[in-house]
Length: 134
Image 1 (cartoon, one colour):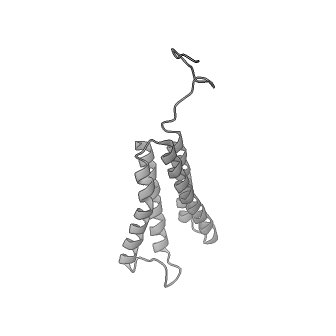
Image 2 (cartoon, rainbow, N blue to C red):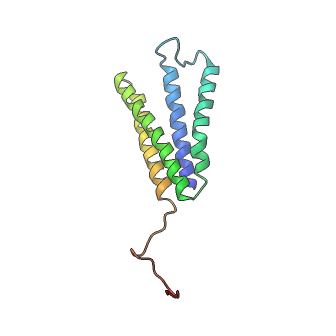
Image 3 (cartoon, rainbow, N blue to C red):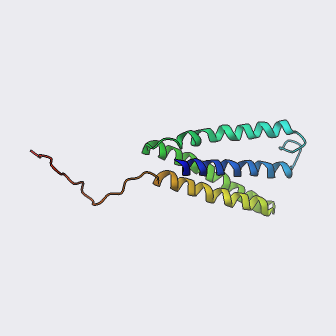
């Protein structure tokens, strides 16, 4: 649970870093910039709201809940992948670095989410001990 929560929080931090990079390099009058701090706070609030489901789902150990959390995190990984493409189109190494870091951390989070708590099976067949079979 701690590892899943850690990875989700690191991914949230990378998303906020991507927001700050976008605010540092505004492309027009209708984009986020440091000139309007209330808009930045609003965008940070939206990011936190979007990360509430994986944060809450990281506390549960049920396999179905973990799969739902992993599917939700796949969409986050796709968003960071699109950020890599944006960084290539506007040649900015910091945007590319945040995008690659976000994809890497999110994929690690997906793997940790699914693998954590799975029971190892000794054999292919379950052992029946001290049970009468009619």
